[in-house]
Length: 109
Image (cartoon, rainbow, N blue to C red; front, side):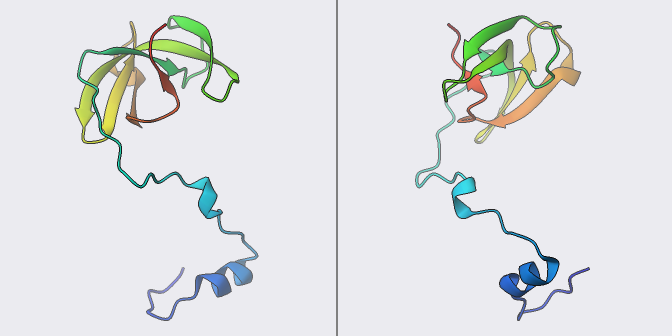
């Protein structure tokens, strides 16, 4: 367990643990925060987080050009930059909270 200290040194800790810090370029932090324009009730496509066939799945190329399976989803809640998407036709146990600019969501069509 690491003790709280004002002289803690991450580089020393990483060396001692023989660990590597995740590089800064792994983290996405836009200079200007996103604006959440989504509203409750809107429909969208969301990459299938369950990888099963229960919902209406659509084979659709993702933003990086890779192919992904998407489900139809409904926005059931919005909070600041977050939105809660429920997979269409399923109960609330199939909801997922994501950021409004997440690459796992796409417009329908």
